[in-house]
Length: 182
Image (cartoon, rainbow, N blue to C red; front, side, top):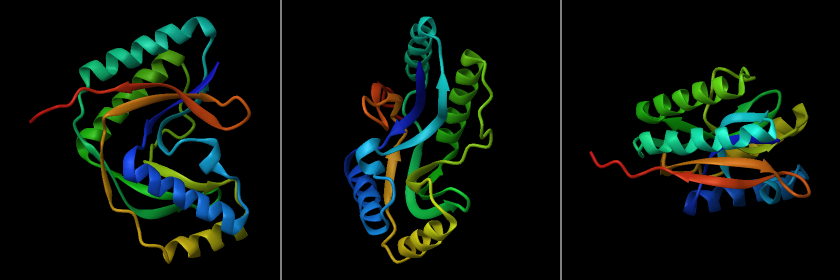
């Protein structure tokens, strides 16, 4: 079975992300990701697990959120791009959230015995991808004229995504972290 693990963006930030994805898709005729996948930050890229290992993955995620209460934030405040493939909402990660994500990535990698394709994780929320160099340049110019986002998101969930029934991805399960009071 194929999955990926992410942070599900919710509330006003999710509305902003989805609307911006939609604007880009309609303006530039790109893949309509706003209809194919909920707004998210990828924590661990797509991977395959045997059906018999799904329970182990579920247990790992349940146990992980139980011992990692919400502490730390993601901040959406600018745009970025991977020049060869995507334009995205850039996400800043504070130290607590970064350490938690890196720990989760290590545990997932050990469980599925897979090496992450991109071991140097960079938090981002994709706005458009599968782009030509011309599309990347045009979309990059476009987002530079938008008012950047201004959202601080508590790292309060880990979400398991699976392939959608037709295409894209959908939420399989949300693992909600307990609120940490300092």
